[in-house]
Image (tube, rainbow, N blue to C red; front, side, top):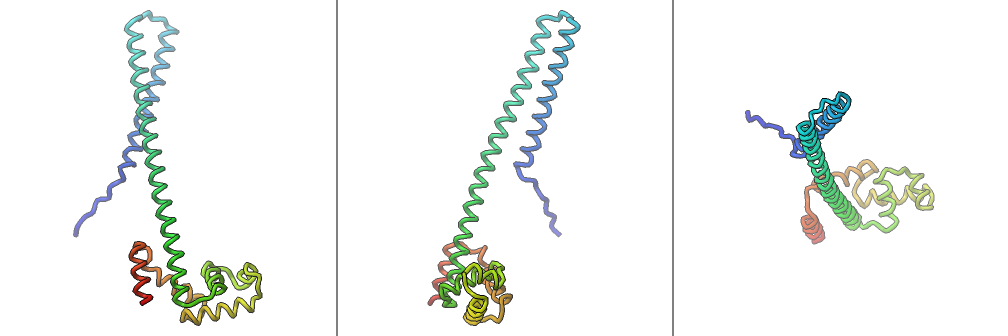
Length: 188
């Protein structure tokens, strides 16, 4: 049996090290402030060496805080780029899905009204809601649904939605080009 090791994403390690640097730098600044207060209150007269230590601690803490700031900016930019890519993929899939649905409606030779009713039914609206949205009667919607089911080769809404889902099983795995090829081969 082969063992697989799960690795945490690189950004997870970056986050942990960023928190450690931030905590350490903050701690150094707090120590620096406490030491400075004690030296001023006690007036040990350490003079130049105490000033060098004080300056060194402040520079070290400041460099750490700047490093954390730069890492946070880098992380923010990475998150923005990743978000834009994901938004693009979602929009692309939505467009492909809409094209897919319209292709199925073309295959079933649905009229414009039937397409509207079919989309509303697939979205889960009941007959009364569909009728209200289309400014028609319940009877008209029932007749249109009956026609849609007949053209799609199904008996009811459950089978209709199941037909769409079954067709979509491979949908997410296909590129736009593969879907176009599939559409063209189906049309022939």
